[in-house]
Image (tube, rainbow, N blue to C red; front, top):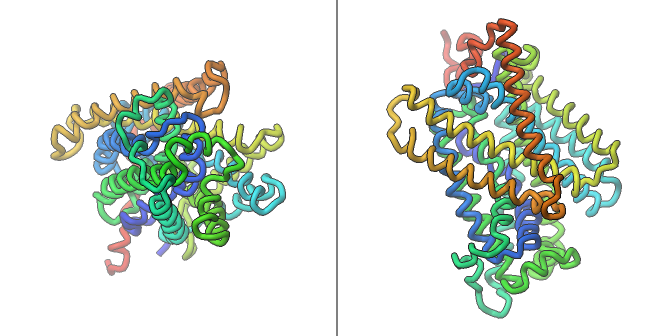
Length: 486
């Protein structure tokens, strides 16, 4: 069979979960996000921020995943906002997704290049180029093969982090397990806003599940995978942050994390398990970031495919693979994403930008803010969609109450993030540079709206079908039906 679109009904809910958790890059959260949060904010209650953020993001996800069941599309932000507010809003949502998922994915080239160069020597640019080839090649594989690659790495990564957590609680500083990192009184610490702002980045990736809504085996796989991913991230990252504080000492963890010579958390791996596991953990940081890059790469490629399928992007971007290994993969979108990453990161290289302080820090911060804005807009859109009679038999909690709470929670987190962008960007407090990120997010929305208005002014008929794309059942068969004789 020659596939003329994404392969239908091939992916399991577990495969979606792998991409979600893989996109969050667990080892990078432990070695980068948690350590940086302690160092930057000195908030001992950092472990509590993860379950609290999980609850807030869960509220924000309710309308998103519920509506995606009624409007399955490989470009969910684009389709959902189009159904809620009209085609122009859909194009604005598509612009947000393409720009800021790309920003996150491209930021990781700086992180992984610098990390690999530190470990193995050589130039960060060379290692970034090598890993670009790996991601570009894996991005051309059909979704089940990509999930196998992600899952194989992720299982080992999570096992090693679990060993860290166990050893942390088994070797507490002072001989007793401190409960101060999980005491609610710690949430009133002066730097708590910055801790929430930094913590949100650990969850980016949970929102990518609806991009696979045309490929999953059952309609409820997306909501189940998203709930499972949020629950897992909340508890696992919270436990890891607590284990680090217990092992170092809650009164010393901030100062130790701020000292680069302390080598957290790899020095603790070395102390507890020897240099072998410490080296493995360091290598897993590299593979973890590579998996995250692949996860975001796949999401962006599907956005390009879905938008091209409806005519708002060049039609050739809707081409999919036909070979055995690439069948049903959005190969044209994948190639474009690889080329755009090469160009953008190449421009940073030409400009002499620092891979961590500029490429990783600025692009990842912009991506986190942009994606959160997108999720808040989708929750607002879900409320409007259901109030206009959309959906089937969803209850009031799903259609109104929980999405409304999600909008309030998401807007609150956004305010906190913007007010603490100096922590995210590692710049001087009050620096005017922190307004660059909000300006870029606003500019992206404006570009999306102008894009839609220009299509409308030109009388483009494609606007009538924005967000309504469906695979042709005569050309793209469901996986569960493709072996039947008709």
